[in-house]
Image (cartoon, rainbow, N blue to C red; front, side, top):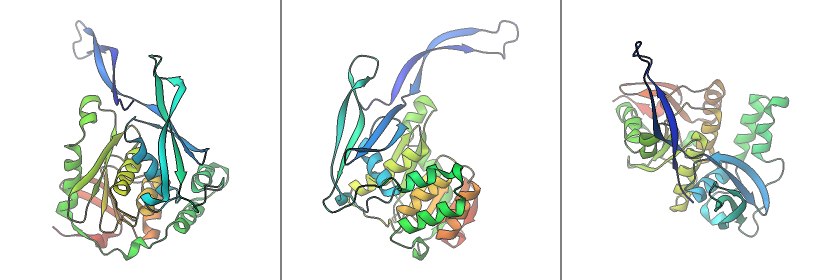
Length: 284
């Protein structure tokens, strides 16, 4: 339980040596990827492929991004169910199911939840409908957040995040996300094979630490591209700025623009590209 890396046998080929093409057999470290089923009220909400560890934070962050909860107090209990059918290969039970009970009076998710709606986009659902659905889930207006950061400060966030990517150092196979507090501290840093999972873990950790959305004055920094889903997660957590080391998608830019969220891509000091909400990124 909680293991994040595994050792595997590999064959390394070096084609730079044209004469001998040396082949070396040696072990290597890879990141663990396993499914996590999240059940709410006894019903499976979703199954996500994730790096084991911080499953409760991941679960709570996902519930926020689905618009199902607004604070840690909305969750009455969370527990790992021992999965005796799915083992880790050693015959030992896994802990790949989290069972959630919401507080009394809070409705369980319906089949028309946000995840179900967005997942059917290939069947005629347009981007505008996705954005409207998300905006109706939020109970606050991110565009009213007056937080701002010097561009030099924003440019330094990816380097700070990279310095705390211990699993990436060992495997090269995970994404990372971190929350920047109003005081400028990079807090709640998490890594995961899925960039969306890393963000959920960050948001969930913030809630478990006592923070309540909207996370005014905070920023989210990610080591990946800025997808629609990541902007969605930032917006529903009330985070006014998302900074990514890579490019955004068209729908991510559209969602950020329509909701008043600041979206910054290609953040690689000393440069960056602001795609939406430029008022929150001030000169150095």
